[in-house]
Each structure stands twice: as C-alpha cells, then as structure tokens.
Length: 171
Image (cartoon, rainbow, N blue to C red):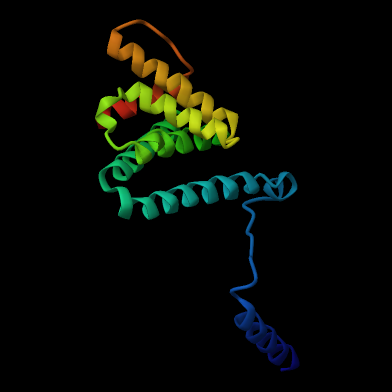
C-alpha cells in the first residue's frame, strides 16, 4: 500500500512538471551507448525549424514560399529514398528551402534567370556565414541551372543535381 501511495505521489509530481521534463527513449542499448538519437533529434529539429520559417514567410510571400516548401519536401523524399546520410539530407533540405531567398528582396525577379537568383541566394547566405555545405550546394545548383539554360554539360555533386532536378520539375 505504501508503495502504491508513493508511486501515485511520484506520478502526480511528474504530471505537474511534465511540460518541463523531456523523456528520451532509446531503441536499444547500442543507441544509448552511441547516443545516435541526437543526430535524429537534430535532423528533426532542423526540419521543423525550416518548415516553421517557411510557414511564417508564406503569409508574406505566398507562391515563392510555397514553391520553396514544395522543392524542399520533394528533395527530402528523394534524399530519404536514395539513402543519403542525415547530414547531407539536412543540407539538401536547407538549400531547397533557401534556394529562392534572393527573390524576397528583388522587385522584379523576372529580370533575372533562375540560376542568377540561386547564385544571389548563395551569396547572401555566404555573407551571413551560413554553413558552407548549404552555400556550396546552392552554388553548384546555380551552375547546373545555368548550364541547363545554355545546354552546356556540367556535373555538380549528386545532392546539387537532385536539387536542380527537383527545382526544374517544380517550375
């Protein structure tokens, strides 16, 4: 009986502080020892933050933000399907969400080619010290899009090719 009352007391305390307590479940002892779930957590948090950012921008920039979200979702699904490592998928997702960032401040973006807008977005992110992997993906994507427009052969990284193909498909 005393054990039951003590467990009820602990359950009540837990309920009071449930919002402040983070409970982390590990799938196995190996996951606990390696703590690889941190990567999953960080990847999931990154994805949610990007979707939140795009959701906030949707109200201001409508179709451009919706396009970026569509490109991001498709690029993410392709990356998962191809078994890309989580770190590369996170860069791919970030680059997809931010590939048309430069359009936000350009009054008449139709004066620029898609490759120019992507290059401007990469330049803006580089000036903000954004992670180099994302900036490089956008630079390669810009070259791929420029060469698609001029029909010149160019092979970038596999991730930038995925990004360029998905963006072309969504346009």
